[in-house]
Image 1: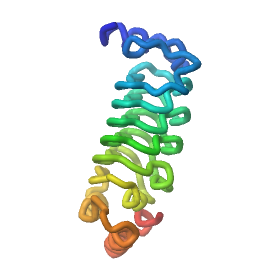
Image 2: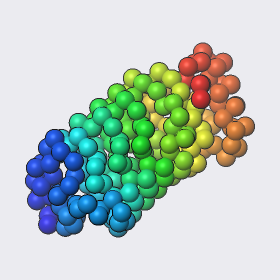
Image 3: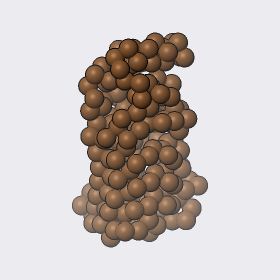
Image 4: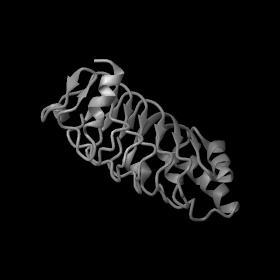
Amino acid sequence: MNIHNELLALSEAKGKNLFGLTINDKKITKQTPSEPWPGDFYCYYNQSTSLEFCPKEVGGDFYCHNNQRTSLEFCPKEVGGYFDCSNNKLTSLEFCPKEVGGNFYCSSNKLTSLADIHKRLKKMDGIFYAYNNPIKSNVIGLMLVAGCNEVQLDNKEVQNIMNNHLPNTRGHLGLLECQEDLLSAGFEEWAEL
């Protein structure tokens, strides 16, 4: 199936979950969540509102951007490549993957805080993109996400302070040093864990 046919099939899922869609020549069934998905997984631009029936493990990139999602419930727990949930209506990253093998894209959502991000996203390998969100607090948790090499935020001063300490190879000591710099610059709420 070519990409045009895949996008056409995805458009039929408008307002639904992923059940019955064909992605990369493979049909989404009730068994899909329990089977590893070997390559990339595309469920973008289809206006679906739920990731129900999504695989729990995706070997390649995972793209669920440009939809109407307000939640990442049913999202994969592990993604081998990039994870992209940009351009949705997310107010929280609850249910995001625990491990991402590449960049994490959550730009252009409605995120106001990254509270507890380190409890949800344990490991990644790349850049955390969160620009075009009304974030006002709790970014310091990214210092505890293993493999977070850089962060992209709308607030360039906070971004620069964070990136001066990323990647964090010093654990809690690195977090405390970054937190001190944020506090010294007047970003108390951003420095809250």
